[in-house]
Every structure is written in C-alpha cells, then in structure tokens.
Length: 183
Length: 238
Image (cartoon, rainbow over all chains, first blue to last red; front, top):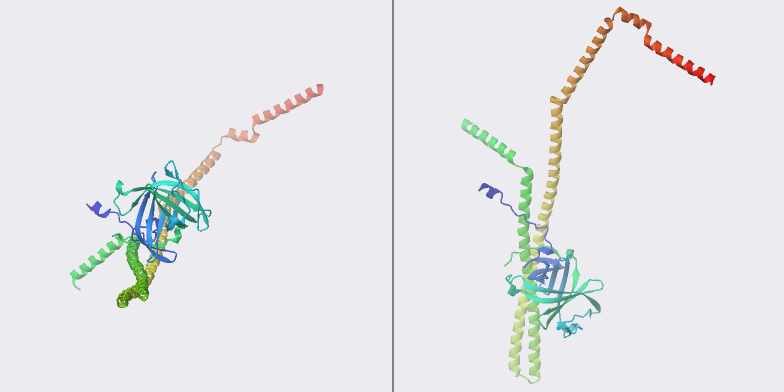
C-alpha cells in the first residue's frame, strides 16, 4: 500500500515546451501578429501509419486551416478554401473514369507543380473513432517553384471537388501556445 | 523553567535536527520547481481563457459592425424604393426606422464588445507580465539547481578522495613504508656485521694465498702467451 502511495509517478507539467505538435481543440497561439484559437481539429489517415492533423483556426475576423504533417519532416501550412471557378482546371477530365489532375496549375501568376496524389481518410477529431466517421478522399498537392506556397485539390466522392490555397510556414512562426481544457 | 518544559525543548530540538538531516535540499528544490511549473501551467490556462474571450469579443464586434452596415444599407434601399414609388412612404419610413433601430442596437453591441476586448486585453497584458516573471523565476531556479547539483557532485567526490587520502596516511601505506625502511636498515646492518665477522675469521692459508695472488689466473695468462707465440711462429714459417 505504501509502495502504491509513494511510488505514484507525478506528471511534470511542461509549460515551456509546447510546440505546434501539441495543438488541440481550444488552444490559443500567436501567428502573424495575431492571436488565434483552434476551433476544430481534423485527422487524416494516409495509410502506412502516416497520419496528419489540420486545425480550423480563427482570430475573431478570419478563419484559416493550419495543417501539421510530420511524415518525413515537419511541414506546416496555413491555407484557406478556394472557389473552384478561380482555378483553370477541368474537373470533368477523366481517364478510365478517374479524375485526371493537371501536372501544373497557374494561380495568381504563380505556377504550381503537381507533387503527388494521396488517397486518404478524413475525420473530425470530435467524432467518435469508428469506420463510419472516416471519409475517403483523394488529394493532389501542388507547390510553386520556390516551395513557399501550396495548392491542394481534393475529390470527395464521384464529382465533388474542393480546393485550397496557402503558404508554408516555419515552426517558429507559431508561438506562445497556450493550452485549454477541452469542453 | 520547569524540567518538563526543558525536556520538551530538548525533544523539539532533537526532532528538528532529525528532520533537518532527512531533508534533501536538491529534492526539495526540484519539488519547488515542479510546484512553480504547475502554477505556471494554471496561469497559462487562465491566460488562454482570457485570450479566447478577447477573440470572441473581436468576433462579436466584427459581426455586429457588418450587421449594422447591412441594416443601414437596407434602410437606404427601402427609402430608395419609396422614392421610386414602389413602397408607401409611411410604411417605408417605419421600416427604415426599424432597420436604423436595429443598426443602432448592433452598434451598441459593437461598442460593448470593443470595451470588453479592451478590458480583456488589459488583463492579458497584466497576466503576461506575471507569467513572464514566473518563467524567469523558474528558469533562475533551474539554473541554480544545476549549479547546486554540480557543486554537490564536486564536493562529494572531493570528500571521498580526501577521506581515502586520510585513511591511507593514518593507517596503511605510510606506516608500512616506515616499517619497511626500518627492516631494510636492519637487514643492511646485519649484512655488514656478517661481513665484518667473515673478515675476521680467515685462516692462515687463506691469508697466504691472498698474499700470493690467484695461481690459476697466472697459469691462464702464461698459456695465452704461449699460444700467441705459437701462432706467430706458424705465420713466419708460411
């Protein structure tokens, strides 16, 4: 009994070492001279034990999506949804019944090159971790020549497409991460 | 002072002394730092709450500003419609008035939200200053603890070395060396004495042989001379 009482390990709080990897629902952080709140958390499963997270963030005026991917090295991007009509992409193009993503896309005078096609599964972290909540989709990732900006096309189901555009940021640009209790 | 009171004081002093011995200053400091970190974590949670409130107030101000602009636009459209004859003027005035009332309500919300935001931002500044101080304190304590740990290691190692050195001097090696020296000196003295005794006990024959020298050595040298002469003669014959 005494062993149980005295050997109980106390978890040390780590208030000085929170990173972008620790972000969660409700967390607050600083980016681009503004304070942002994590409003929603999304999980992506790319197969082969490759997972990534995305956060819907809001600063009281704007909402963006903060993506954190640590497949090879940490890649962080801030993006927003894009109207499909703003892209010169033929979403009806099909080869063997599958959408044929273009090799390049020109958007706002920048040429974006196709990096790869990634089929995966998506789930809102607030939803229960059951198969029905994971939605299948395919993503095509594009980067500009300098790899400072990114553009993503996503296909959900047969004919539903979404696009987003954003920029890659460095880990240090996200600072002053403050935790909040969920709920 | 009564005896009982004195006894009690002695007991108290002894207990304090025993507890002092039990206290490990390093562990106590580590615990202190852990407690401070816990306080800091709680302060960070509270700061996050206030920042979230500030974001919400900003959001409210922004939304209500848009709504107010929208109501004003609607009031203008109603009046324009009435001017164009598409709406009864009295009804248009009533609706425009309603829209402007709504607009003012929204503007009141904006004013309140902005005041709230200012208040929250003031609290945030104060809390951030306190948190900064707390962080500095933790950092200072952590550094001091590192130094303290290093000093404890050095002093403990020095203490061990000194202890060993003192043990060597008092009990072992120095005494053994001294004893060894004495023994060697004794052996040398003994050897010298034996030498003296041996010198004194030589026989008369030994003394005579010693005076004549070693006959074997003489014989060997004459043999060598004969051999050399023989070799010389052989060479000259050739």
